[in-house]
Amino acid sequence: MGKVKGMSESVGVAPIVDMRNISKAFGAVQALRDVDLRLYPGEILGLVGDNSAGKSTLMKIMTGAYHRDSGEILVAGGVTNFRSPHESRAVGIEMIYQDFALCGNMDVGQNIFLGRWPVKGWFVDRKKMYAEADEVLKRLKVDVNSVHQRVESLSGGRQQSVAIARAISFDPRVIILDEPTANLSVMATQRLLETMLELKKHGVAQIIISHRLQDIFAVGDRVMVLKRGENVGERVIKNTTEHEVLQIIVSGVKGKNGKGPPAPAVKAKVKPAAKRVAKK
Ligand SMILES: Nc1ncnc2c1ncn2[C@@H]1O[C@H](COP(=O)(O)OP(=O)(O)O)[C@@H](O)[C@H]1O
Ligand SMILES: [Mg+2]
Image (cartoon, rainbow, N blue to C red):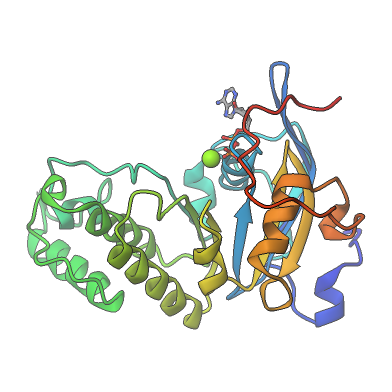
């Protein structure tokens, strides 16, 4: 396969996910234009940008929930064409959605194994299901009181934990968290960030989409900025500042992988540019 020379060659580690020149339009809206994204094993990548920048779309294209118009995606070096998240799950990619996508009227154990309850003969093997659910939660150091609790009775933070436990029970190599801390308390956010670091220790690569740069700076290795569907910058966390990343979010201009011209200085008190009209 015609390999493009990239960072993988220079650091000697192959990306687990390599998205190249991804474009996607919804009718007249060009949601993504020629976007590249590389994710390395055990890495935490922050994905940031204004509302409608294309972050969720890019992630849904990675999982097969949306289909790209052009570009290619390699997972562990092999070209993929996922038709659904079911197919990307099979190779170890899990996405946790902002609304968690759980069944509130079912309990924790049932949710973790939703759609694949273990059976014994004709019946659900409840003992096995709850024992395994308990194990996943312990492994995550998640303190949900009981695997028998109904999910709707849990706080937002604990529901988040259940969604993560469910993702982890598939033993993924890649986890995508879309705005995971948006509705969490300070404590729950802290727990989530600790869970991410725990997963990192186990070599799981993670992408976190967040408006909260402090979260990304707390756990991230690298940050990538999308703006109006384009890559406008990429930085190694330890070589940058929240201020610089904010500047790129607000004023970034296209330049692949952050190699474009430096972002111009921004005056203090920047408002999100949600209403800005797409440039032509
Ligand atoms: N299913 C969809 N149908 C139509 N337009 C969509 C759909 N999903 C996303 N878009 C559009 O694509 C653009 C990028 O959206 P999105 O990826 O959700 O941005 P972000 O997650 O960065 O806020 C937006 O203009 C949005 O309205
Ligand atoms: Mg989004």
